[in-house]
Image (cartoon, rainbow over all chains, first blue to last red; front, side, top):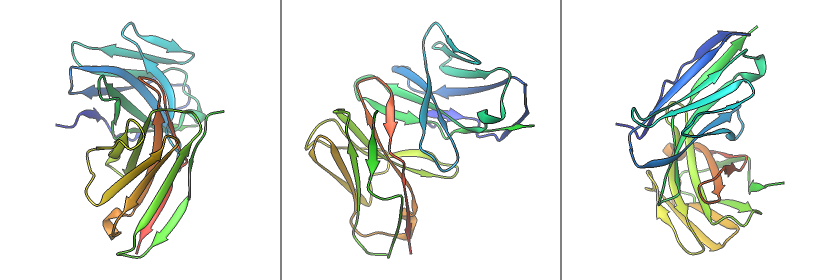
Length: 110
Length: 111
């Protein structure tokens, strides 16, 4: 089983819609969780960290469910500029190693 | 502004050549990483380093080695390049349990 699993998509979503991605992780000792965004032919960049209580940044909401070992990302009122690949990232305390999911490709359709 | 610089954006090398990929960071971060990214496989960790002269194998170290002689520089070495090492290589740095910063990537083609 992969350490971090994501649905690869692609997700093709009309502009203005709400879209949600999930990601599961296998190591129950994982401590830190992130969503990264990667545009075509560019390097990944941090979108947001994921906190136990859930957190929101504008149109983006991230949730963590430790009991079921998954994290989620919700994008509301999607924009054309949201088209990208979204990477789920887990950091296991003690080895400072980031483990990436394979990414979910999102395309927002006008 | 944070900066992670990889020495080349594009490289073409011949099978059997020794290849050096350089990564330099200006953030004084302890942790540095080399990943390769392939379609359908995502980012896979090759090697990482916690400190100068320290290195740890990642998930796919075979065919690669690394060097960290100075804190700001982490080099990835392909001892004898093969066609299955054609990939996008990404260097990253990480401050403890914090945001990772990536270089712009090196697209290596081995012919």
